[in-house]
Length: 311
Image (cartoon, rainbow, N blue to C red; front, top):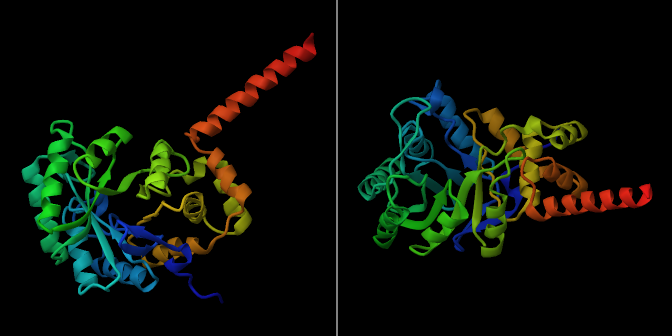
């Protein structure tokens, strides 16, 4: 029987230029209750999941104060503190939770400060390695929200700053205020609307953290075919594809189950062929601009050829 693969098979990536982690992380949203609200059905299983992912080489954990709310951060500290020296915990602030499955933006500087200081207490940290603005608030100028995070960084409470759920213009605005080391947007094999931001991350050596990385995998026929060919799950194929498509992508699949976590981590050892990577990329909803352009060009030339033959 083959040994369980570890996250080390994914290779490494530098966060902020000075925090080296394995390029397969863990998203800690799903260790909470239904609707990302309250305690998980089994607290023991949630803690076991956290401990298992660290045993298998995960040294980047992504969470947020709004997961629970507060539950995910509390469980991380309970399960893993004192933390391994190489463990990087990334958390987020800027959303509030009025109830299950409900999310509301709050980018007021006072709230950002309160959220960050609460995360420090719950995580039992003196400094948060990566603090991310969870989502821009339409009611608050982005500069005000990011300015509050910059102040916290200057005070030593934050090491590096990331931004989430943003457009390129919002990223550029944030970069004028404080160095940004990561972008976290929704991205998977079916939803590739943030692909231009991945290109930007490659150019500027930023980390791209895809949330919802394995959702809607069945909507991409190439994913289904590759899973059948390799004898693995569609979710594993999508994770392997993300690792293959860009060195700046750091997938953060989440789960509340140790067994499911092991399955996700095993994806790091799956080797897709270049043709498979290309086919999955072409099967998404939003192809790279140059791919779309080449497709349109082929269609145009094909039409011209058909008209010429018809003469």
